[in-house]
Amino acid sequence: MNSGTRIITVANQKGGVGKTTTAINLATALAAIGENVLVVDLDPQGNASTGLGIDRKDRHVSSYDVLTGRAGLIEAAMETAVPGLSVVASTLDLLGIEMEISSAPDRVLKLRNALRDEAYPYSYVLVDCPPSLNLLTLNAMAAADSVLVPLQCEFFALEGLSQLLETVEQVRGSINPKLGIQGIVLTMFDRRNNLANQVVEDVRAHMGETVYETVIPRNVRVSEAPSYGKPAILYDLKCSGSQAYLQLASEVIRRERRLRAA
Image 1 (cartoon, helix red, strand yellow):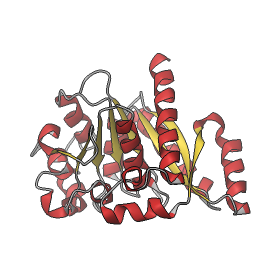
Image 2: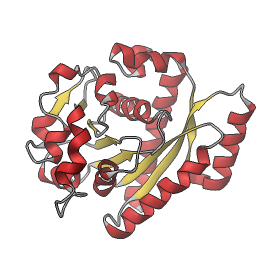
Image 3: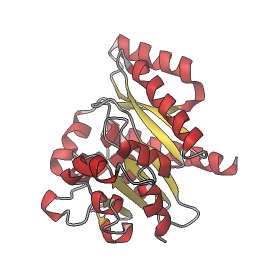
Image 4: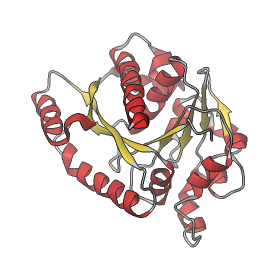
């Protein structure tokens, strides 16, 4: 990896919060504004790979091969329909990865070592994690500069957040001292719902400037896009969800510039 590459892990141990949707649409938005982006799919379900149009039968070299040392990143990276956006796809083989690497002394550093070994011109690497705090997520955090947390606008939003932030602190203290929180992005927001508005207020009150200004609305077109193997931005650029992800990409870049300058 070149020294200018920023590695952002997209993580939340709770499922159904828009984590993968955020990973693929943020990656697409970053590519659309001229960045060279790689998505690493570490979720055995492989939804990020599917959402970027990579058919399961075409995933001959995957993130499993990268983590087990059978292949390098360059070999595993596949181009998508989005110019400037590649993906290291996931397969169900990842379900057995914990058993395979758990006894290795560098078991939480497999991804970091793979990223370090390759000289590749990505300005951003986004890692999509499974919805759990397991060895795959720890690998992603160990390799990352920062963690981006998608948070659904629902009643229990803050409850799971504290556990995730605790894990980030543990990783920072033991494995990756540079790891920070890139930001918290509020997803699936319905302005007609009083509870959703209250959740936004509560999260901002608790987390302050860590929370992005951009809020991702609940949007049918965004939900439909993965079934067509497309990011929402390709499927319907003008829908409110796509526009929100483009705004989020600009905000992420501004925040990254501040983090680099710090």
